[in-house]
Image 1 (cartoon, rainbow over the protein chains, first blue to last red):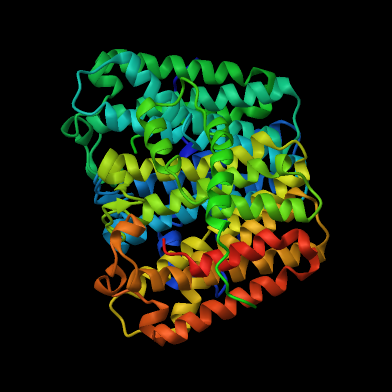
Image 2: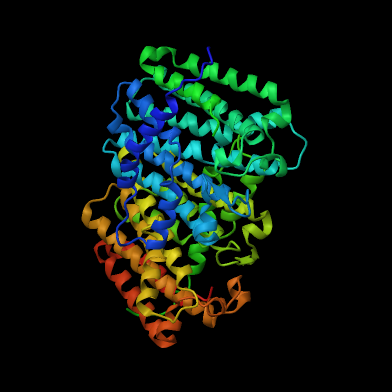
Length: 298
Length: 298
């Protein structure tokens, strides 16, 4: 794979994310029965200019599997709710104790700790509500609920966060790092691909390709994220840097060094691109996305 | 309604809960991909001798609507997961800061705060995973997911917990108390009735009866709970007493006094029993349950 920087992927992704924002806003609208402070904390945590990588993968894998963007939208929003929930809870004082996220105070800093716990909880419940309320076909709801719950749950992202916490202040261990990356990050990107396939009612072969693409993209993303914590600046990232080392986190660079980490990110990127083969040239934007993810500065 | 104490309801419920325990254990089994410490924290939080009132309502309303206990079991377990999640998070230091629950250290006291947050999160995700993985009929999965998510979410239990936190240290306000009770407690009991009806694929009329029964039972339960905090003993309850007043909570006794609270509990109990009329004598155990809930000492 050539690793030329795709000059326009960031702009294209930003433009896409801007177009996705009204979809998020519409599906996250609350009526009078929801306490306004909770609505505010939830919206603060998700309508905050994230990169929207996961929803992008949901929508585009659905299209590549023969579905429409429209039919994948509820699943894209649901997955972003799960992602936002995980950030809010991971930032809590008892967890990573982060004050800054995307250049703004974290939810518990802005809204208080109790409200942040409850806003995270609400986002997780909302993900499933959106799937069940906004999709007509019961088979799609059932399959999407299963994928979303498994990707999120104790054998998925939440289990990965446990491993991440347990690994703190222990000698760097590459096998543990890989397991954390698989569960904490790659699993939810894999879920993005699976949800796109579910929305399109894809066959097994395309579902497997979408899942493998998502998984490898997620691995590349997390290794790049570990590298950025070492090499990036706080101004670029909108959050503190070098805090993995201070927190004694299990990271790829700590376990394998910078150069091996860069190579591992490239290898995962290659595998992500290889998984796209079945989709042909129509998947070129996802190939650009892979390069964007490992070349990004933020 | 006569309020004679049903002498055997506690024993019957305990016997039923003992029989339900292996179902919980089976559906909460984890494979090697889940970190053992997380499995332990999750099991600690749910396999702890709770009264299992909500699962009992799920199973029995399903049977009264013409279904079998077996087909309602995954929904009963899922609802108990949501209930356990809510207890773990409500007990956290940033929330109610409780050290004792059912006579044992709370999850964060036993497992640490980070693990308690993640165990609660895992229980919530697990609820939806169990619904989607253990029920074959996609329509039932879709409807149950919607009921469970709405009952749990920002317009349901989680929203009620926000109102509960916001109401602390404010002048007692009966309308606010009623809203907290509806959202925080009655909504999830209503969900129990709705899930029973969904499992049985009941018609609208029986669904409405099961939902109304659950809702009124939940109101009666919460008013009785408020009263027990004033009149009970820690030894009986397995948790601290008079802590609502210390925490400045909005409670029925604080807003309306003891006698009006007892009357309100009896009124809700009467409405719960009235909702059961359509089910005839087959619902006699639920009539006993209503009396048990308002007469209980723990």
